[in-house]
Length: 228
Length: 241
Image (tube, rainbow over the protein chains, first blue to last red):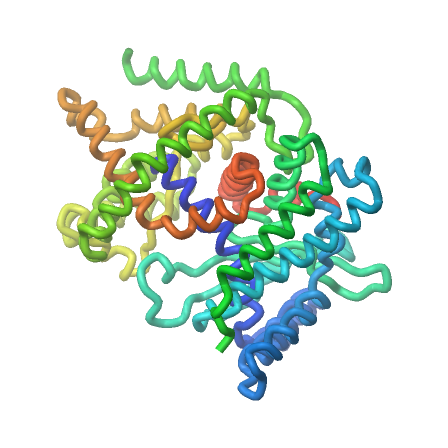
């Protein structure tokens, strides 16, 4: 297989990483899972159900749905932990004010990206297939996303995804990363951000500025893409 | 150079490069000692894409209906199946080798020379494989990251694998006389078709990246590692956060 094809595959996978989280959260429950004793698997499944309820609640306006999904997402994922991780070594050398600004910009950016994908849900279903326990507070939950029947071409292939479930200091399970076809979202973002920082003299404030601009751009482009 | 010699040379080159690359990593960082040069080549490739490959892909997508383009993709994939098969065997994966062999047989006959892919509807879906993955399977490290124009992102191990895979390609021998133009045409068609299938995706990733070079490097590394390990080793090497 030609290398460029590999590259496109890889690109497609990363894009899917952002597209799939919305879709995955929106996917209906698989009954077999209800019997699973694994807490992390159950956690992922419950939240899939919860997200599905929000997306399918006909009583909500597009705006209400977006707001509910936002607080759902913020509650489900540890965006602060992810943000600090994506700074890599620069998290230690940056000023607290810069780090705080970045933290805020990152949350804004992440939410804008997921919101822009909300309207793209097209009937995929998610099935948790198992989990690997790295540590009591660090579990990888594997799942397969199956496209809706009748999906065309390349989108017919099932997609392998995984969620990294960790714990908050008070013992609550929380998502810290998500993987699509072998690619972890937070790891990719860390490469992107530290690459940028390396090219810009380690300026975390510049990074925050760029992220804010990107969030605005994402919002502008998805404007009118209602959640219908 | 005879085939065994060429193979031998490739593997030696690979091992030498790996030998220089024995530096510790935490499983997520990519070893990129040629970053400066790679970035120059990466930027040049983006320009080349903007001027040549992307416009060609757009024109190709407009000129041909989806069904024809799907047949082009099937045909190209079928041509590369012997290479996939060779690597399935080298990795000792009997199941995968069986699937690939079945696909070659069915798609080359019922599938009219590979234009159609009936094997997938019989439950034998395609998988890719290459000698870079085989080397990885044997425990060879990836070595320094390389960005090579036209080939794209790669590393010492996978570039070695790319060259070695030619030896597994029957068309390399069959079409020896016109080989250069045959291979060139085949590669060009492969690239244009692949590019046309990912116009939006690539634009999207590029737009959402702050450092596109570093993003591509990370995506490539993670994707290859996950293919080699079947996902398990990559899970063990995750950073703690």
